[in-house]
Length: 390
Ligand SMILES: [Zn+2]
Image (tube, rainbow, N blue to C red; front, side, top):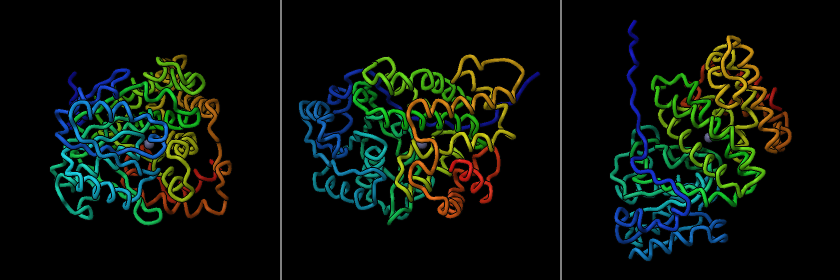
């Protein structure tokens, strides 16, 4: 018997460096790519901690002029992006280095694009609309979750709470530098939320209804889940454990590669109104709706969830009982989220029941994500899911 493999495309960051202390060797790794003047994009918290200093010193030792822009906030605004571009332009930047969590990396990506091409951002929003070329770009994540170093997307907050995105292969950096040392000091709550977010990326990529869901993404998602599920508790409760931190950073990158090519779905669509309106961190927003969305999806996706159940929880591997393994998988995920200390209900993060209807309406705006969900989600379904999560 022959089976026809469905056509697909797969894009990822061409250069990956993974090693402890790599950030302090950023000059040796990336200086030749970045040119003589680099815009270094980071956030004020990391500046206070001095976490970026070895990377900056290393670039300077390699002969580069380094201009630091460290005003990136959570859910970065259009004004912040434009300020970064202005500062990069004044410095005649020849390359951009992003250093931080997903927010700093997202700003670095679009700053590199706008500095390199001079194009109008209003024409670049959406999928495949960026023109380029961008400046050389190197990204150094300091959290293990977003996978932004290997995704072609940058999300910016426009106005009060509207999230707009640019998705283009141009936003994949030239090099991603993964240094697990940078994640050793992450507090337990951030480790937990970002770790669950990475697991959601892998779960949603694996089960995605996207026409481009593909064997590479599926393979990467399973390995990501194996690494993340086995190490998240150790990383949360024993933050200095280098093995666990390394596994989380690698796992979040693999999950990022998976969902960059087989996009995420209703967990993320329903998480966005929680983050946008109530300023709940992205990973926690996902964790709050995760078990409820998976239960909703189970009638269509039980076989898929059963396939990956054993990657997360080895004792759930194998056997004929697809429904039983799917149910156990969802309950175990909910239990894991509670064990790593995350809040479990929407009411726990200050969301009143009266807000749920508006959130369900807002979630419907995320059609670019909802189309990937294994089961169609109506506004009434979204409201039911929020009620279950409340
Ligand atoms: Zn996410």
